[in-house]
Length: 124
Image 1 (cartoon, rainbow, N blue to C red):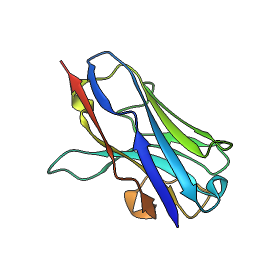
Image 2: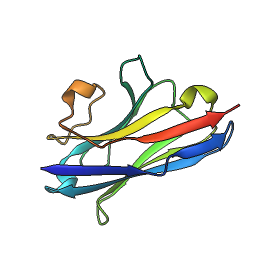
Image 3: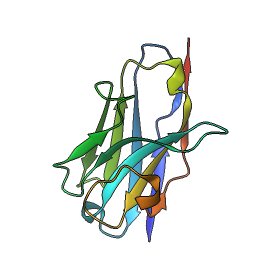
Image 4: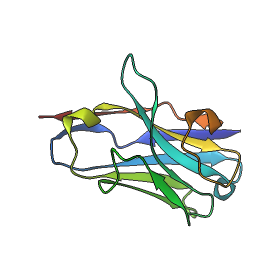
C-alpha cells in the first residue's frame, strides 16, 4: 500500500506562487512514477504534471507548462509542485498520485494511489 498526503494549498492572489507537497509512505517510493492532477466541481480530473520513478523524465499539461514545476526528493519520499504566476482559473482541488510503474503517465486512469487533495484558491 501507498499513502499520499498533500499539503501546501491555500488562498493566493493572481500572479502569486504556491509550493504543494505530497508526503508518500508505504512501499518503495522511488520505483513509482508520480503525478499531480486537479479537479473542479462538475469537471473531470485534469492532468497537470508527471515525473518518472527516476526523476529523469517529466511531462506537463500545456495549461501549466512554463508556470508549474514538478520535482521529487527520494530521501524524504516527497513530491512537490511549484506553482508560479497563478491565475484564477487555477483554482481547484489538487491531488498527487502514484502508479505502480516507473514510467510517467498523463492519464488519471493509469494511477493506482491518490491523496485526499488540497484546495488551491487564486483570487483575482
